[in-house]
Length: 281
Image (cartoon, rainbow, N blue to C red):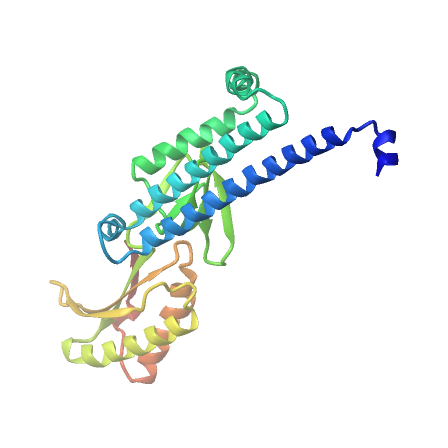
């Protein structure tokens, strides 16, 4: 040991001092990690709490969850930022000088981080204006999916393929929010008269159950039959309604409508003028 100390010209006192500093740095990191873990556990308890005031706060739904995630994200940045300052102090850089230099560093990197600033500012406006929240079905930058997370920099969407898409907030120009949780589809099938409606509704129910079971990843809600719709012209329709992933209308055009025609034909039911009307809202 003395041989190595002489080679590297390190005194035992200096070695102990350096070891102490390393131990303090590790302690700061572990403390920071421990505090963050405790915060996450408490936060999870608050979100899932069934008693006390928290159940009323988080009962408000997606917006409360979104603001909660944003707050946790901000606390994490602040905590690690502060820990980094203390670590600098331990390795010989004055903490106060570090804080004072932030303004200079900010000016220096400001020109190179304009995109980051745009991300943060845009994200704050998106959240507090209530344009969308975690759990909403939205269309952003040509991508459609369910919002899984919002941070100070990005928005994460999960599409119908299960793919997680991360979009920088500064790229969000137009937001489409599907308030019904998807694209609401109505299918009106013409029948000869009201007497034929019960049998037609039974066929619609059968087709809808099979389609929902086969394409559960695209058909978001179990289709329901809404009864007969009589027009002033004398025409009578039976109506089927369901919710599908936006942009996935093929499941209606290529699967649901052809099967409805097949089932009606198999059951001896006539569709006057082959009138099967599909509309979205």
